[in-house]
Image (cartoon, rainbow, N blue to C red; front, side, top):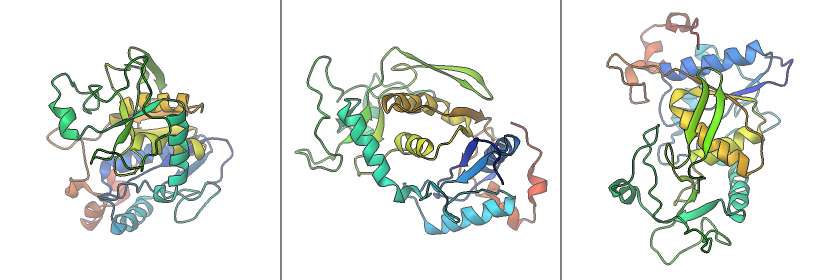
Length: 291
């Protein structure tokens, strides 16, 4: 793919299972968008989830993407000007962003467990089914900001290492234009709450790592599934806090199974690997997809 424009798109799979047909459709849309713009498509290996990451999934990811006909100009297998393209090798960038957020009092430490949050009676679910944080550890208005001067890996009197949450501006509408769904609006504190940017095990959370990499790699348009529409509102707040311009966004319709459930990596029968073993070809699987 020889770029003739400044358009930069990306494929960003996580090697926590085999890629399925839903991944292929979204990635195909991303590739078609890059080609239509005469731009660059990069491959990023989002391998931060150490608990679920397996090397075999990375090898399978590259093999399956090549089999389906994807082509990229930069990536973990071929390098490029924004290397490394493995998130596990980019921790220094996430820590620098964390420190900037902490120094600006945008984030605070939180010792609540998942069980604590789910047990909160007043904790409704966001549009992407994430429980809205009830504010247990949130700094009180006008009080001391507990985040300043603390390190995400420093010890604390509590046995639980804190995660770090971004404090959303309650009541503010976060609006953006989506390339497929049109105008989108989410109200902070109602449609989504304070969200984790750094986990208690010392790993940057998806929201932070994703936007830091998209900014650092100069991505101009993010193409991904509709299940991440609310995440876009969260990430726009991070872009703003870090004084970075957000890219454009286009969210694709999700692919569902026969029961109407959206495809997930547990759907082994619809993994690209299994479909290939059944003798199907990429042309059989819908390269004429439209967004």
